[in-house]
Length: 580
Image 1 (cartoon, rainbow, N blue to C red):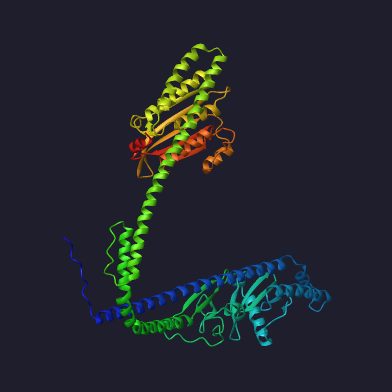
Image 2: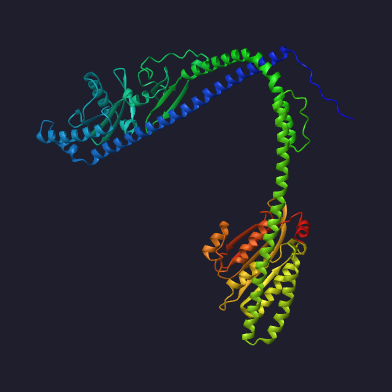
């Protein structure tokens, strides 16, 4: 019984118009939200940049203040110029020469830090007050400053209020920042107007109505009320509109009683938002005009393309291809037929390639086994030959019997996996053979828990690493200890595996060999050595599909350490059948 074809109920044009209006309004709201969010993000970034800029400037001013404090204090305490001026009459030649020297030094200091800074000295013994560098204030302000500073110096709290502390003072309705450094009856004074101190921050673009100012700890504004664009600072009318939003940044100076305040007010961001809204409205109008064209195109073309796309999706899901005979577009029907043929060819090609790759891996595994077996044979024959030279007849008999059992296991085993218990017995036979050869040159210890005996592992894997320890670790100087420890557990949190650790107390891996092993690089086999290790690594890579983990290291106390983490594979039986 064939299933009835599902028919879609036709909808009136009014429905599509409603959908289009909903989409347009949604786009308008989303764009509004994006615009506001973008403006806020840009404002935050601009504020962060201005904070960093203000911090750099204030750090520089703090450094300048600190250096000037130190310079004036050192001059008062160590420079003989002021001592000479204090000892002689102001009209004397010595006083005049010392005054010129002092003026020259502070003029140079003024050049380094800006002509906005003014420096004065006051000798209380002579009631003598004079500038020691070119001044940037008019005469009336200078006279008022002189009288004000002298009155401050006569105050007993001058040390507490002004020493090493730049403090604002009001002179002729204008604020200056001064620092008075006293030393006995001599004083050096540094001075700069508040407007000059804040001038670099006023050169930053803070918006049309943004401004920078100095504010004391009481909240009093110390600078003239003008914006960075030179216009008077507008009054805050408390408007809640987005156009009136502003950001205030305050930064403290070190060792002062005032701080810098920057008010940021960018109107350009809001203009960008309005422009974006106008663009969206234009989009709304254009979309409405194109609506009829879209409906027609959707009905005549897009509907057919959509059905063709659905059929392609079914082909990708390896289901039966749909019937395209009802399609009114000949090109789509032809494309469907050609595509189905192409998919069938690709599937056939994939199957062929997969079978060829499996066969290639089987051939490589067999080849590596053939490489390993002669390697073991030659080593055993060499051991028996060495015993014969030493006339160790009983040992030769025992070794021949053990070797016979050893090679019987070796040559009769053609599987890709064997039980771990049998592989351990095989390794112990090999170690017994080597002990008969080397006698007391080494001892070994094997730990095999009961739950690990029936675990399947590739044959001759442990043999390769044990043989490497015998070859490179054993010496006649001391007894070498070889340990083989097996553990079972859940590793990496999700799969059961067997952990096999082989250690010895020999010299360990050479640095160059260890570096290559840890980096996964191939070892040099041009001289016929290190073949066993490389073949074993390749076998583990093939048989465990890159899931086995092999690590090489040297123990801190000496000796090599090899750790194998072999996960349980669900298809060991299938591997055996394939290899058979």
